[in-house]
Amino acid sequence: MGSLSIWHWLIVLLVIVLIFGTKKLRNIGSDLGGAVRGFKEGMRSEDGKSPNNTEASSPGRTIEGEAQKEDHRI
Image 1: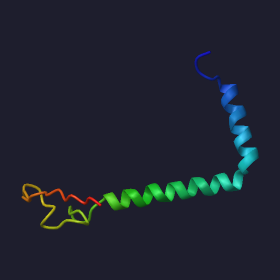
Image 2: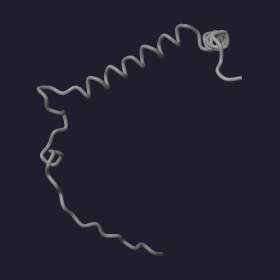
Image 3: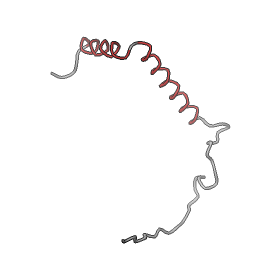
């Protein structure tokens, strides 16, 4: 029973193409590629600095605080 053979995958691919059509699949592929490209550009930094580099997020700095639990009973 294990894995599916190449014929099973070809039939699944044929059914997907028949349902969605090649134009819609091509558009989905280009949209996905654009999203990945945008993500990579967002992760890449200019001049070695991250785009959201602020003092509060600099490494080695500890921000101390105190948490309090509020009791909201009706």
